[in-house]
Length: 122
Image (tube, rainbow, N blue to C red; front, side, top):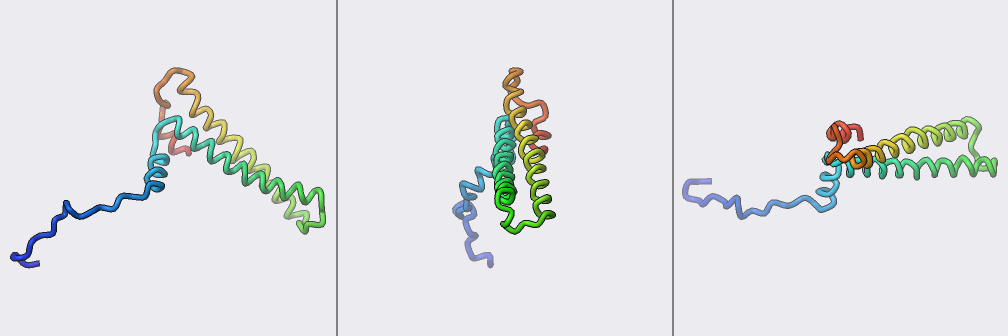
């Protein structure tokens, strides 16, 4: 660019805005609101419940019709995975989510005590 040429107008250039879904996802994942964090815990635990339920269906189908083709070792592994997913990835996070959502409301606080730590725990 030489001195005789005009500079481009930077203010007139359009800056593309992020898609609505990406912006909404970012606000939900960067929040420090105890209600949103509690709902994130609940939604994630329900997702893991669906996965554990699918594995439970496979295990139950193998019990009713042993000719499905799972070996004893594979059935034991699936049963253990189903149990671990149910306890560790569903029951624990749903209680944490309910506590994060309800306890500040029950004690009359406007927010959680350590909201960033609660969000980081998610």
